[in-house]
Structure formats: C-alpha cells, structure tokens
Amino acid sequence: MRYLTAGESHGKQLTTIIEGVPARMPITAEQINESLLRRQKGYGRGKRMQIEKDLVDITSGVRHGYTLGSPISLVIHNDDFKHWTDIMGEDVPEEGQKIRRVVTKPRPGHADLNGALKYGHRDMRNVLERSSARETAARVAAGSVAKIMLRQLGIEVCGYVKEIAGIRASETSALSISEMQQVSEASPVRVLDKNVEQRMMDAIDKAKKDGDSIGGVTEVYVTGMPAGIGSYVQYDRKLDGRIAGSVMSINAYKGVEIGIGFEAARKNGSEVHDEIAWSKERGYYRKSNRLGGFEGGMTNGMPLVVKGVMKPIPTLYKPLKSVDIDSKEEFTASVERSDACAVPAAAVVMEHVVAFELAKAITETFTSDQFPKLQTELAQYREEIRCF
Image (cartoon, rainbow, N blue to C red; front, side, top):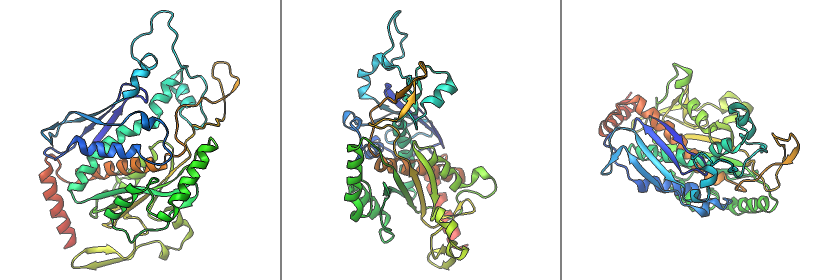
C-alpha cells in the first residue's frame, strides 16, 4: 500500500490517491467522514474549523460499497475556495493585474523561507499553501481507509493526548482500548485523565489570550497486531522505524518515542526489557510492555505504544521578527489563521498515519489481492504463532 496527496491549503480541493488496498473490502464514505470530522474537533482550534466541514468524495476504486483493488481516489472539496479564486486560481492573471496577498515575509518556524530558497519562489504563498497542516486532512483520509481495514482484521487503533503545555495525564493502563476510544472522543482535549482536562483547557485559553501557542505529547495505542510484523533484515523494513518516520512527517512533530522511549536511557537493562512468558491460551507474551510492542524492528504481539512530541504552532498572534526577502528589512512576521493549540487534533492525525503504516506492513506480509483471503491468511498465521 502507498498513497500520495495533492492540493493547497486554500486551493479547490485536497486529493488522496491510495494504491494497494485489497479488492472486496467493505468501505463507505461515512466511515471516512467520521475520521475527517474527528480531526476538526478539539479545544483550541481556530476559526477555519467553523468555516467548512471536511467531507470526502470517493471518485474511484470503490463500487457498491466494496473496494475494487484499483487505486482509490478521495477528494475533499474546499468550500472556502470561492473567497480565494483570484489568489489561488490556476488562470494566468490578465495583463497589469496585480497578484493579491503576496507573501515576502517568512514566518519563523515555518517552511516559508527554506521552501522559497529551494524552489526559487519570490512569493512565499507558493510554499505556505502546500506546507500548511491543512494537508493532514488528506493523510487522515488515507489513514481512515487503513483503519477500516485494520478493524476488520481485529486490530484497533486509538490516539489521544498525553500532555499539553507541561500538564501531564496520569497512566490509564486499566482502560480497555474501546474505553480509551470512548473517553478520548468525549474529551474536548482528547485526554483520558479527567483530572487534568480543565487545566489543559485553561492553559489553551491563556495561550490564546496572550497571542501565543502551546504544544504537547500525543500517544497512539494499538491492540491486535500479531507478532512478527516488520523485519530485522534491513533498516528500511524495521516497522518501528517506519512508524517513527511517518509520525515525524506530521507538521510540527519534533520527536517520537516507542514504549518508555527516552526514559530507557535513565534505567538499567533489567528495568527496560520485557520478560517472555507462555500460556496455552495466549502463546508467547511479555510480562510487561516497556518496549511498546516492538523488538528487533518487529511487533512482539503486545499492544503498540507510540508517543509523538508536537511543538507549539509557529503562527503567533504576537508574531516574531523576520526579514522581508525583497527589502531585506526587519519586519513583523505575517499572520495566517491559526490555532492556539492543535494537539488534540494532531492526536487524530497521528492515529491515522500510524494506522496506515500498520496496514501497509500487513499487506506486505500476507496475500493482499483479495481482502477475504487476507483475513483467512492472517487468522491462520495467528493460530500458527500461538501454537509455535
């Protein structure tokens, strides 16, 4: 499986093309829309989430509720484009017509200046429109297809918030994954610990009042992945490495942890590694899960635990100083519509990019031309490793 996205933040639409999804898999637009609407929720989101609702238009690869095995194309139309036609339209401007809203002041923390240097754009709108986090809607669309696949294979994925502005949620290992999904979905900040929910919202309110932004930590928890998915034989086949790279590709993410992550550097080996046990019912399992479900680049049958660190959004309403690329004079960086905190929404994005990597690894490991055959083969493999 693989996917490509296309589209600009204020352009006509976002497009996602997914290749490699098995044929005969049940899927509906409503399932994808559910994920897209979840991405738009979250305390601290800006006004753009009130302007338009992201809804998918499946334009190929699905017929009568089932995948065909051919590429799936998903389109998310931008209802706000009517206000941006003159600015973002593809037509050549008439002679003497001035291009509106040209950006010559790069914003600190954004792709603006680096992208302008790389592609030679004197109008950095050509950079910021594509580098915008708006593109993550297209990635959520791709990940929602993966989640639909995983769920029908007995694999559940849940993303939630662990920390915002230094306010940390307590451990909630007693919750089942279905409870995690319900609790996080009901929380305005997508947190599992109700004791810190209001403190997080207060921190977001303060940042918004101060014209500032705050970041945090998101976590994805996965159950049902069998052992042995991924590989140790080449660096680019290690599944935890591929997941880490995918998470780091999300806008504003600056770090990834698997299991206890960086805490392992401060512990002895006996406090880090998970002892192996066996039972007739479960087969091999670990007595703890400090390694987050991965050993040697492969899943070990335990729940997967992946954390991602999101920096504060760099678009500030008390903007930082920059330099105009035309005049070379110091300037106050321009402001586009922004959020005080996008961590709750980012948890949904991370959930979906992780899901895609897992679905991709599954289709690489088992027969994947036809979904019913994939289901059968995975079930047989689960029984095989249980009895190993």
